[in-house]
Structure formats: C-alpha cells, structure tokens
Amino acid sequence: MVKNLLLIRHADAQMPQRNERDFERKLSEKGRSESALLGEYLQKLPFKIDTIYTSPSVRTLQTCAEIIQQLEVSPRIISSEEYYEATRNVMMAAVNRVDNIFENVAILAHNPSISHLYEYLTGDSQGGFVTAGCAWLQVLADQWEQVSGGMAETKDYYYPGMYSK
Image (cartoon, rainbow, N blue to C red; front, side, top):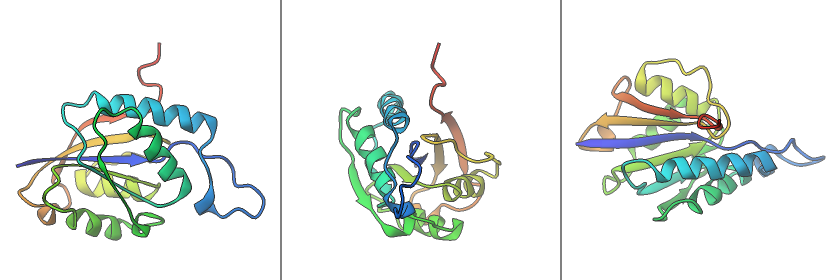
C-alpha cells in the first residue's frame, strides 16, 4: 500500500522579541504569505491530507492555520510537544506511531528535525529545508510502524516562490 508523507518546515517567523521564548515566536508577514502559497500547493496534490501532526510552537500552529484556509477538506490536526526540538530518532518514532487509519499524513515541524528525517527516510541529503518548504514522500508499507530508513521516494519538493514568474 502506498502512503504519502509530507514533511513541512514552518513558515518564516519574526525575530524573537525581548524576553520572548523561541517557542512563542510568531509568523512574519512573509511567513503568512508563504503559508498561504504552501496551502495552495497542497490543495493541488492528487490526494487529500488526512491529518497534520504539528509542533505546538506558535509559528507552526500559525503555519498550520494558514495552510488549512487554502484546503477544501480540513484534515485532523494533532499537536504534540515531541515535534519541537526533536531528534531524528524521536521524529522517526513518531512516524512509526501514526495511526494506520491515515494514509496521507503531513508532519509540520522545525529544522533540523525535518531535514534529518527526510535524509533518513530517503537516503538523500536535502541540505536543510527552507521556511515553508515541503517534501512529498511516498512509502510502500502496509503499516506506518514498518517505515524505516531508505524506504521513501521523493515525489516532489515545494519551496515558496517556485511558481513565481
């Protein structure tokens, strides 16, 4: 069975304000625009996203909200602390725990976690995801717990502005 996995880095965020924790950083105006464009790209994919697993940081939740506004069908949103400052092993464990009722899954998180997960799953070096970058991966597996290193094929990589004139 083919499973689609979208690895997404949050959109551009403001620089931290005085006494503001990294976790609380908000999207910049550029980030809001990037998120909307990313949502338009996701709407055009040949499948509907079943669920988005996201970090609970302010910028990832705002990215998620902007994306959803562009989708005809709203996916289920699952926010978890494990996606904030996660190691590759934590990210991979999260992939393996995805509920098998979902076939088309997005993970919205941070660098370098997203890049490290991409490199592990595909065996390719991405060199770091740009803000609002999205890799569409396909995996041949009956269950998410079967997914491991080198099993994913990159179908597409979206970055903001790639369709600009």
